[in-house]
Length: 456
Image (cartoon, rainbow, N blue to C red; front, side, top):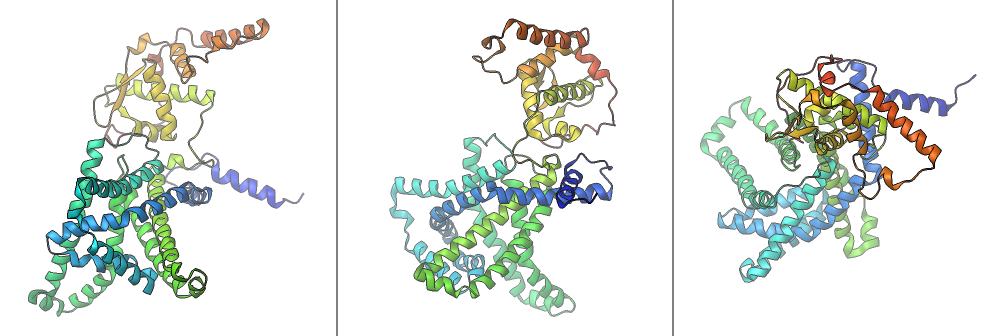
């Protein structure tokens, strides 16, 4: 019987998304992970979650661009390097071609006409708020990509944002100025005249824009999310994002050259339309890179369905048993306690699902957090005194509303007997079994060392 294309697609889908049958170090497993990564990134873009955040950032950028540049311009003007703002802005808008130079000139004109000193206290506060809102929106987008629900404290956000606004531009232009001064000095010219140093310097000069973009992207991926981002995933995402941004700039420049019909359709608004499109492309590339860094650091999220996974009752109980085994085993053998990230890596389950179980066990008095940073988990009671049945009942009841409990759902007598029989059978199956027995059970594989590698 001939195999239909639909059967081939179903077989391919099973091959891609079924649990891996190969060792993590095998080339088949790595190749399958790359395929999953590409499909998941494409799904996130197509489904619209990333594009919604991108459109939000484009709108916020339009509101905040002039105040942001004005604030940076005021800081740089105090140090006499404000003339470097226009060349930098021109480089960022270079893909727009002649329209980019026109947009840059108009923005600089707005900034030069703005007098921060006459705004007053209320006007200055609104100016700073408009600028801070852009950075806060960027942080919210990154936190959503990294599945982070806990925001930084107000004081920490305020200090970080002001540091980025005041000190960041100064450091960037100071570094650029020192580099230009060093290369333009007599000693620098003498060194550049020596071959092959001159050729290497010319190659480095052409590579510097790419390196700066890669460094900037990597820095953003490490610093902005309110979680610990490892350097390697951020660097890989920075390289991919930087190259993609430069490539998008070339492609967009070619598009602008051939888009004469836009000028015919939109007339004087053509510049604004092209500017909005380039802002959209730039933010989308940055957010896709952030998603790439997240999936590289958390491959357990590479599954077929979008959104946070919803655990079945069977999986909640199974995951709770596994969590208590790992936490109890570390505690019994005197090892360092496990963090949420370490448990996620050991179990191969998305962090959100593990966190749901940890919160249920913590609320039920089975586990407690340490005062470390990041917090780790240790047993809250003597393991031998915690029945497995009580622990499972705690997990099964997690999330029940106080007004919607089994007692609020009356059942017919026969149905109630069946439900009670199910409860008795579960209690009888684990009667006399304590959580200490889970901790003493042999692990299916060797557990990694106890070094802390991150937080929530």
